[in-house]
Length: 636
Image 1 (tube, helix red, strand yellow):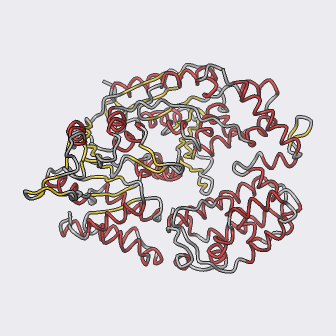
Image 2 (image 1 turned 180 degrees about the horizontal axis):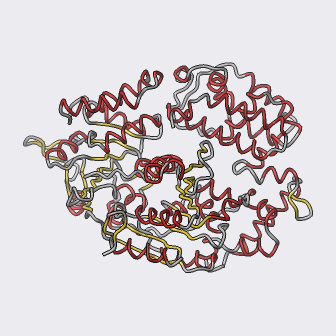
Image 3 (image 1 turned 30 degrees about the vertical axis):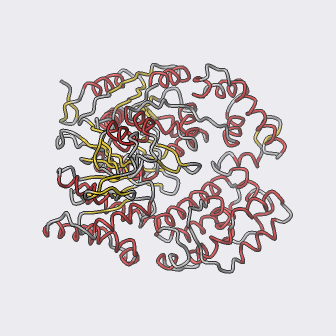
């Protein structure tokens, strides 16, 4: 029996810690809720005793912020720092929490801080298979020094051994795999037929294939318009069966809010004593007068007073914090949430419901992948409290693909697949930091190459030379060395070519400070459906487009970005308006506005770091101060 911090470790935890002690890297593939985090705690403790550094990387800033708070409580403020682009605190601490992008960027910049790095914890390593961000994760492993050891944590990875073998092949040390398929609390999958209620998939299939499926009995007669059961009916059943608290996942922000409000108006789950506790938490956490006056705050608080809540990326971080605190205090009984709630937030519940098993992924409506399903369903079942966790999916059998649903819910079968794409930034850093022979080795070290048994290695090398030639044509590379323009581009990690053209040419002389902010904002702006802005005069945009007429590529790019839409809101904030006043200029949710400001700050600070122009650096610093105005930190 092995104990750590007063806890008796399970078999897979003992295996993992033993392998780490022996100096190996470890890939841990274990079901959600089995206790993977304690292995990370072990790595950190071991590094501290040896006077070494540990980096804890995560896929999203929200998870980094959460881990920062947790680890400060465990190890003390002086021992923990955070780096997420827009937030930098205690960067010399022995334990640094950061997004994976930041770690990868450190490696490309050859940051000396990695010299004393003992280990990197990759939380949610399955994000390596993400189409948009997977490349960053691969490069974080590829460019890591060979003395660094990895702890890769994930829910089930069917091809974990293949993934470990890849790391072992490129890093030249043993990589062990530890798996744990058994959950501490067994998970039961159930289905809610919108016409008949709780059913098995077998029953739903039988009904669907019945010739009279669309005709249903209602009070002794047949009708072609059967009533559809709603989330209210499902929650009523769960409450009767004592299967709450419940997280009800919806793939729509508006749906989480609407359903929470609808339920709260019909019932309450709290006693008067519990309501008093809720009011105390609200008063302690929501102290900003602007936040107190928001409509979203009023709706949320009225829900919370009845034991109901909603949680999505569009609400302010302080409101999300309030919901998470009350959920942890067992004062929220039904939480309507988007899938972001399930990434890293360790708040298990008795039951997880799915409003649908289909979602829009930015390109098309599709069924969840099995890994996505189990990431969410895995929150069901509280260790030490529940004998069974319930995952209930709402289904409309008339339109559902029941075979796909059966396969999805049978087990996490999606293998981890490389999504590697070579960027201009990587090409520049390869030229700057590596010999031609080293570049060839690195280019053929991707998981993509490994998984295709080297068949496409030549294609990646060709991509490199094609991109390198393009950069030579732009004067970013000359005589196999990075030029001054190339040095700038390799220090910015998004829209690197456009930012270089804007800030490393004579164009910069014509920009006002606000226009610099506006251009960086345009590069980061991501419109959402139904997002609107009050139409207003946009003089800064007009001036820029006139200036860009002589540069067709830049003109075309920024014309499509529709800067005139976002300019009034940005100008209002830049010129000192209160946050609450911005909401009259846009339908962009409050949380998205804050996140937008953070991303703008992140881009500006990258430019600030990349430029050698002291005057420009000073201007950019002033712009950041003007954007921040305390709002980013206040609502962290």
